[in-house]
Image 1 (cartoon, one colour):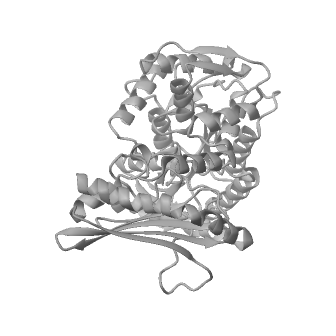
Image 2 (image 1 turned 30 degrees about the horizontal axis):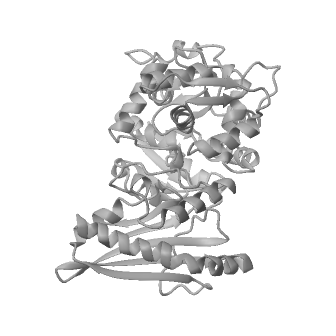
Image 3 (image 1 turned 135 degrees about the vertical axis):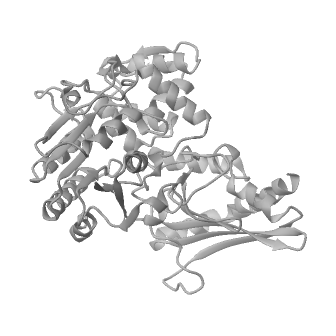
Length: 484
């Protein structure tokens, strides 16, 4: 079939596309920034279309000539996510109806009992599902609770809480029951939903074979990962908001994502039916148990085979526009801090150090300054430095790198990063390599486009520290290259 994937740059969408291709479908992917898909392994096998789900004309063009559309877009980490998701779902529903699609497929969340008030997050996902069901197009809404897979926000929250806190003070919701499901099994149901007959038009709860409390999930993680038994002390006064502040400090998951996730855990999210079995058979080897899903996720992390992560989604408050072209750009003030150094290392040795920057390798600069700035960003609601990197040695356009987004990789010549920290303006960092005789020349540019007076004052306030931060980075990167 001809399938359209809305949200292919996200965690689930990026994993679904190769599954659809393997099943023999033709795939069109829609992205606001197609450049983020430049280096995905399946890029040459799909049609890539630029489009925004909030623009009706974009959706009409994106869905034209197709049969099945997957709606995997969620504005979870925006403060206005409810309205944004509502508007986007209505646009897609209208475009699907106009294009004469034979099937809409949406991945939502399991909702608790009907008489229980929903969190804003769950209520929004429920509303999106209903908008698609009311579209006039045969629709399947798959509803899952916690998805266990390498790189998912739910998994990362569970992982870091358990690994970093041998003694945990927890809220009462850790005793609520949850029915987790492996991401492998979610992809199984999503892929096969494309082949359902037109008379299948409804919601389906999907879940793994185990029903656990969140406390049991944390203790199970400790067992599978070989950690000592965790001591858990429930405290009634810890509200979801306070819990999210704790998650923001301890895990890579920022507060804006942690709050909706935790508010969902206040409810018991257990499937109420498993009617999906009458339409889609489980995988041949059966649904993965919780411990098996954990083992698979941890194995993928150890083997550095994590195809997508929750952080692949662009941070909503960060600028998405690329670096204005130099020197032709003339739209206003652009501050620059430029450093150059020659090294006896070969261009290839210097590039290897540059491409491995960030994450566990750090930033080759004054660690305390980076750490303080990262904590300040987290407190302000930003991403901080904890997103790390997917692979310790190789970067790809569009992926997150600590508080940066990889904007350009031109091996072995240029790496450009766009800042996603909280800033009164837009910022980029360029690291470049040029051959120089029997060695190499390293060129580093930090660029900042200020917004208003706050941006001007910000640049002046941090400028005195640039020699320590950026000067140290240039010295240490070339020094590391020479030492290899």
